[in-house]
Image (cartoon, rainbow, N blue to C red; front, side, top):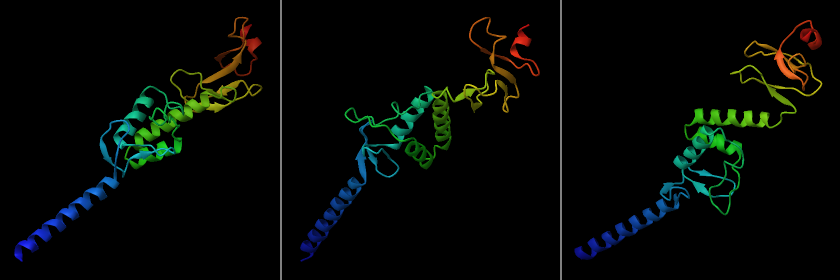
Length: 183
């Protein structure tokens, strides 16, 4: 009877270990980039439901950001038959949740800067080298610009600087028109 009890206990323990492995497998997946078995918790899943591990996700975003590239076409599902763009909010939230707040901030600044630059009709950058200040501006707005960030002043459409061509950005000339400055 003792041998039967030991065998029963052994089979119950083996069954429990098998069930534990199945439960663990249910909470793990194979990353589509590194092909390693990874925990589901903390991984990144786009709207397309393809999952990548945190390490691969962070490396992918870091690579794109270091190249100065954070547009929708670049940050997308790595599955060749999918390539669905990841949402900006999902990227930012996932980076912050995985303790990469600085990368999330850098990514968001880059996205914002790219968005503003892509709408040159309504936004411009401060002409001073090294200043990253952006502002709303459209044709017909005041051409005098005093940058609140670097404190430099410019004429945004100065004919004094154009040498007969289209208007150029030039130094501010308070109290004088461009023609007066040119003269």
